[in-house]
Image (cartoon, rainbow, N blue to C red; front, side, top):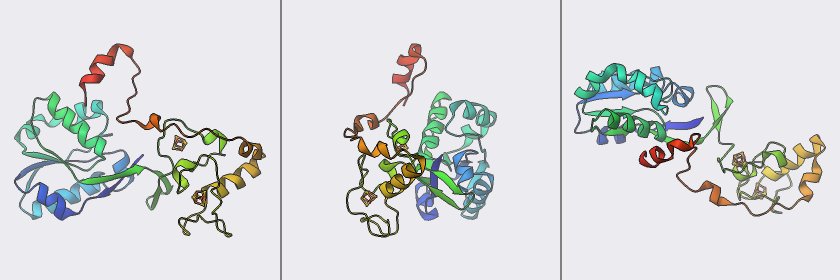
Length: 232
Ligand code: SF4
Ligand code: SF4
């Protein structure tokens, strides 16, 4: 999922300064899991905005705000409020904000879409409701099959594909950050337990970072190539 954290309310307030009629859009997907944009957080934000004199016309929480098909259903039900609003505040990831923008454009509405959250990466839930962690950087060429299911691109401070760097501390922590375990130490121990230490004898070619060129796209239907070029 995409990890998110709330922006400071003062910063959101400043961006919304000139708008008085608002819609607050949450997200029932990642932002709900992160407790940043689910129904409780959207209602709390609506109360806060009301407290500074804003009128909140609707508080939809689509099932997934980054899915245009979910927005067509959820926001499609409140078109009159959308038309009456002056801006939309989105409690979702950066992708959700832009998918809401896409939806407003589909509706021929020119409305500011304001981000209420900061996106902080692809996160996994380690402890439900408490701790999330980035364990994959979406590099586009996954090497987990060679590293026992531990990602050095994300967990090694240097992103080494052939480790370790030689600086691992005696207690197994990283030379760059004593608070973190050396990723390659973890990989070594994991491969040892799996009986796959031979994986470490292979020298991997330098990472092709071209697979991370942005924006990346996934196109399942070649017929839609032209449409894909038009959409941002
Ligand atoms: S190698 Fe790491 S960053 Fe790349 S796809 Fe696999 S888990 Fe993600
Ligand atoms: S000590 Fe380990 S995690 Fe830290 S930079 Fe070196 S190989 Fe990477």
